[in-house]
Image (cartoon, rainbow, N blue to C red; front, side):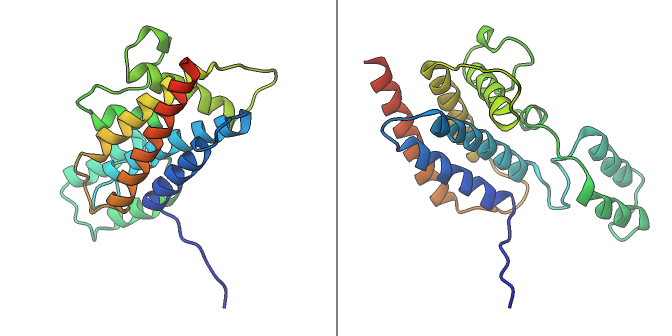
Length: 205
């Protein structure tokens, strides 16, 4: 009998936290550790945004254009059994999920967390670090010709601000029941924060 592994946003969130925690525990961090720390924390935030914003009808995390189609269906007074709504559900499988910046805007967190569209250095935390995180994740996940360098302080700022945003987002009520084990997430987030702070302390000493 064939064995299958099933994935959804909740399991993706936890697996990204596990990866970040594993990489941060390394006493001496090389380029490979930094790559996976950045990718995993960025993607943990992205997965959690998708989980928190998705409504019970399955919509809420897609691009603005696709979400407008869903609202148009409701505004027209059609039921969930209408041919138009069923067609919309079927097209959901190939619909594009909104980018992390758009989802953060949509989440409207109390901290005002966003991904800056220009010079992240000009912004305060958490937006400064979120901008750093997005820049590094783009580079590590989609390499370009040439080389790039990121200071330890730059990486740590990105990690701390991303963790703070994950913690804030984890504290808000989602549109559906949680897709992940909240207790496990808290334990992992605390561990990740501990190792990032320890890394920061060692780097500044």
